[in-house]
Amino acid sequence: MNKIFLIIFWLSSALFTYWLGMEHGMNRVISLDEPTALMPEESIGKIQNADASPVLVAATKETKEKNVSLSKKQEVIKEDPREGKSLQQRMSSSNPVTRLQAFTEILQNPTDDNVATALELYENLPADPSRFSELRLLAFSWGQTDPQAALEWVESLDGFEQRLGSNSVLDAWAREDADSAIAWAKENFEGEDNPYFVGIIHGLAESNLFKATDLMTSLPYGRVRGRAASIVMGKAWEMGEGVALHLADNLPEGSVQNFAFGEIAERIAKEDLPRAVEWVDNMEESEIKVAASEDVAKRWARENPVSASEWVSAMPESESRSESMEEVVRVWAKQDPVATAEWLNQFPSGEFMDEPITAFVREVARKDPENALTWAQSIVDMERRNRVESEVRKIVNRANQKAEAKGKVSPSQDSGK
Figure (cartoon, rainbow, N blue to C red):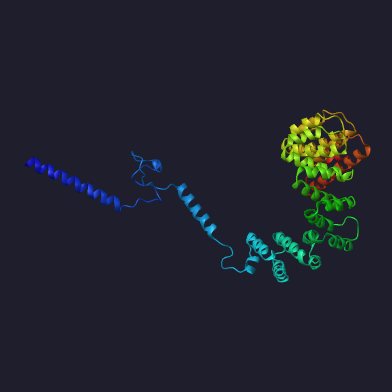
């Protein structure tokens, strides 16, 4: 009887204790903000039950930071910059993305009223580079509906804004009526190097590449024709390598055609350097090969000047090698002038070495004028040598004057004698 009583009492006590434990566990909240006292801190996030059932784990600092970051990202995603703001308010926003989106929205339909609204708000923006994108949109959109009025307004702008604005207007105008845009450009500029043709050729290349090419080749030699040629070749390349090569093949022989093949060589080298190298190596010596090889050498030198120098060294003595060496020197001398000098020393002086040596002298003149003058004396062409030596001495004199103004003595003072 006593044994039965003791067994019943023991079972009752065990059940009561189990019930208290469950009640306590259910009411207790384990903090997710700091380590729990039920487990060592180093074990947080690692412990699992023997039966692999999930357990409540305290969050580490890293987990908290990720949760906060995720929460912020969700807030950003939900945020609508247009919510509660008028179009005019967004067009005046200090947030450049919001502002540009608003300008794009209104100028997609360039009615007189929309252009007038955009114009008024643009003129109230800070007069700094932050509004250049809005200017391009405004000028281009206005150029689609009333280009002459847009150009009249652009003339009131200053400096870069005037150039950017006029190019954008003429770009839009040339896409719709190139002949009228060309006539306006000729009437409103005196001189040969007409900057208005840059915008016209940009727009015309979008609508009629071959007409743009004809206009580009008709321009006189100069900066504008160079920029126009770059635009034309860029558009041709977008249409395919075959189109670009066909266009270059049919250009008049001379500087424009050479430039075009150089552009193609650089673009091929950017995508597939070994193929560009093979292409150049298979060319006969010509002005086209000179242009192509120097652009490939320039591209390769940016990636690995040592490898580029090995390729150039294997070329036969020629203008192509000379121009390619010059491009390698421009890059390599900035990184390692000593190694560059050692490479140049492998080649005997001669007319084909004058270009790379000149490039080397100009790169090292400011840091080591005495060495630069020594190298200049190895230039074969006397007119070039005198000009380069004069350049170095001017650099030395300016350095000495600055040193004297600061009350210091320049270590290169004697090199100008």
